[in-house]
Image 1: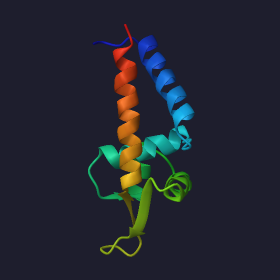
Image 2: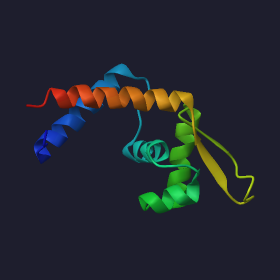
Image 3: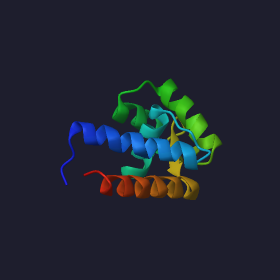
Image 4: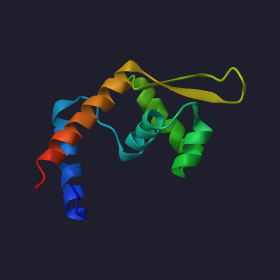
Length: 113
């Protein structure tokens, strides 16, 4: 199936609306981008690396990670190989959240003509 630009926007609208209805977790676009990066690219992940990958400033990534960690979607720990660096790790709750999000996307995509 090839999506048009309008189909892509409709898919995104349907999935976001369903996510807001079904989940107590309400993420900003920045938080989602960071979460997707952590779960869809190979670790290790650091604040510095995430900032570089997404073209963001480190303080913006740190603020987003504060929220993601607060709700249990990621966790941070000291990097044993570099005392100046913090590793960002996946969690079971984050994996479940993204799995459910992916399922919503797949179902919504099937309904696009």
